Length: 81
Image (cartoon, rainbow, N blue to C red; front, side, top):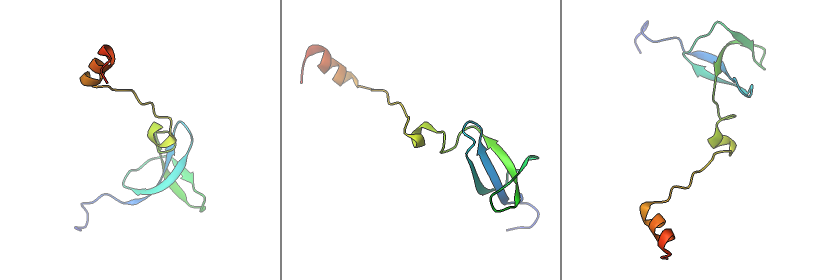
């Protein structure tokens, strides 16, 4: 890697704004907010709207819509099996 052209890669705490779930990960994102993590160190805090703690796919609260095709609708309407 060339020196001086890449952003600083460091540990950052991400917090889900809806559930309060926090996790630490490496990132180039920066923030003026900081938070003390479980290890006693202080890290920048990035607030995000959706994480695996609140996303419907990961929580199991995903709604599935029944998308029947044209052939299925025709068969249901005219009683063909």
